[in-house]
Length: 540
Figure 1 (tube, rainbow, N blue to C red):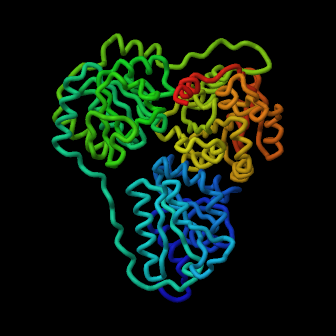
Figure 2 (figure 1 turned 90 degrees about the vertical axis):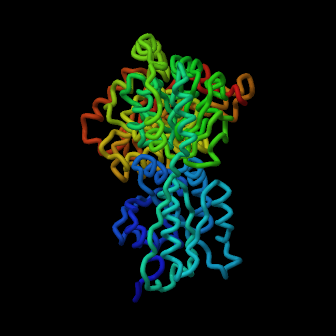
């Protein structure tokens, strides 16, 4: 590479050649040129209104599409603004590449100067750097490969002086592919024997099992296991007659009962957090096995009887070759209970000024097309869309809750919508989280997204006023706000919802061009914590 090409142009071209198809960001002087270099190389670019919005859109796009996504930010304050979104992606093992401008080494007194490597590491991301024109290609390939092959979030710092330097000619470095380890034959045999001996086995599949449905179902059929997922893998077993849905706080009563009664629980690419296990209660009486491709994940959250280091799909295939045939948990009685009692119950609607969130969610499930992508922000409300809105597969649910931050739901919806334009995207938010991320409402309108935004509006921070019952709630309660009017002012279709009759607008919007988002300001009842929140707060 010679002539007038600079390092920053080389970076943009190389990332496009490596397979990056979409980037997000907020442009400042430090990332102006790298953003345009990506665009010039054919990478689609989405301009967000806040850096955390940009990072979260990229995170959701990567999770939903399965591709590496890129976010570009200005040095210093651009990176710190994005840090919550980057932290969420890093804690969730999202393959996200952050192109962060950085101050030149000589500018020690620049107001923009912060220790960007330390910032990245502080939230669990991998810190990388384009060190010099001579190393630029190798630095980019290394950072991209870590994202793609190890499912890591990488912050690639681009010092301004290196960005502007002439590119060095040479052959691009060879891409190095990292592959998950093949499981040890002895561990495979131990797991097969445990499955042979189990009378009530349950598989819990997590993010690391996405894409391995065929292998897991084949093994579950052999040993008679029931199937469940962690929240982030929701939808993986949609359509299976033996699927229990989500394990953990969002579990249905039946799922919680059957998982608790299991004598063997195998976690496949699931980290077995307190959320997935209900503080360990769901798996307290079972032999616990964990399969993961990362050594430090094994036993990190729960003690396990057997840890198997290996890729989920290859481990399931290997175990299938040696496991015996058994009925296991798949009796006629259990099968009938799953067929008739596998969903969350919804009460009868009672007319009033506010709508029950269960009634709202069940009604939306019937109104919205089955081909949908559901995302949810954080808060007391989030169990309702997770529990009541069915999804077609694991790409149909995007759950940015690794950091438990509120305010990410709208940006998550935008990223997921762009990743799957063939599906109706549904972003569920609380009123607090929606207002926190409201700057991206303009982004959704500008992009012409047919996005359904459901605001579970209890006029406050519900998790806090339910948790601190009996205390002074002046800091967490707010005057009721007409969020539908705000949305219409931004160019959305919108309605206030106090009953299922007010949902008629959904059918009208679905029948139309869907060229603007639809916002439903649902005034929900807030007379108590949701079932999952009551369970979660047992650990506080």
